[in-house]
Amino acid sequence: MKDWLAYLAAFGIALASATVGHFVGFWMVMSSNASGLASLFAAAMLIPLALALAVFIVSYAAFSDRWLGWANGLIAATFVVLTALVCFMLIANDVLEESPAAILLVVILFFGGRYLLKRASFD
Image 1: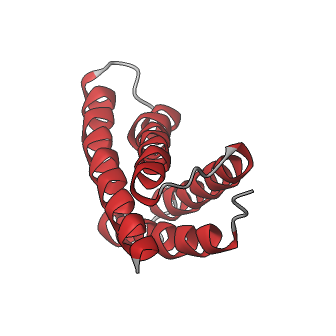
Image 2: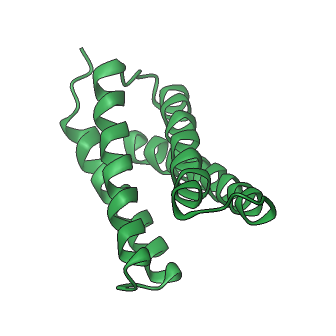
């Protein structure tokens, strides 16, 4: 149970940091003159998710007393980037609206992250 509590706490803190980062990035893109689709993806999705991943890794290490390591961090970063790219493409191609795509992103990251964490080797 301690592992689940550590995961939930770290994920909650990371989600809060990603939300703040998303709003700051979105504001920066919308207030600048050079705002394109690539800058929107980078500033409003990738940078906040990278920040959230860093916050998650540090928070999870603090709560569970286990360091993920560089290899597991690289796997997690790849998972986050690919998931964000898929959800962004769903939004850009008008398959999903922003709110359902954001919910899908959070659900995939939550359950996929938990699955990857269970399979991680903490040698």
